[in-house]
Amino acid sequence: MNEDVDELDAYLARQGEPTEGEAVKQEHIMMEKVSINPARRKLLRTVGVFGKTEEDLKNESGLNDFFFKFHMDFLLKENMLKLEDGMYRLTDSGIAMHDSVC
Image (cartoon, rainbow, N blue to C red):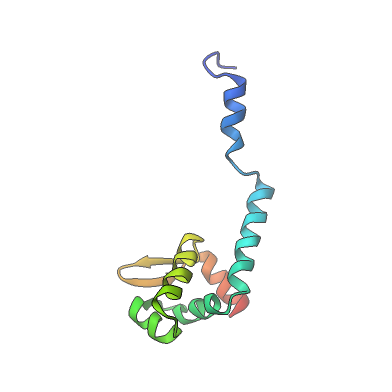
């Protein structure tokens, strides 16, 4: 073992990383949060395979500005959507979710 690295420091540094089981559990919790919310399902369905602009999404979703931003921030943070060249598009996770709940 490297003498510069204290065993306790190495252990504490590793504590911040989730185990594989914890990561899967967190992913399932996030997927449940997306799938049980009708507004989030509608946003995923509206973005679809071709993507949409923010203006189109706002118009088609029927959400007010606060709830639109709230749900879009959640979907972006949880890596369901991405913003590319002014268009919202589904990520690989978003496509999987879209196929299963929409």
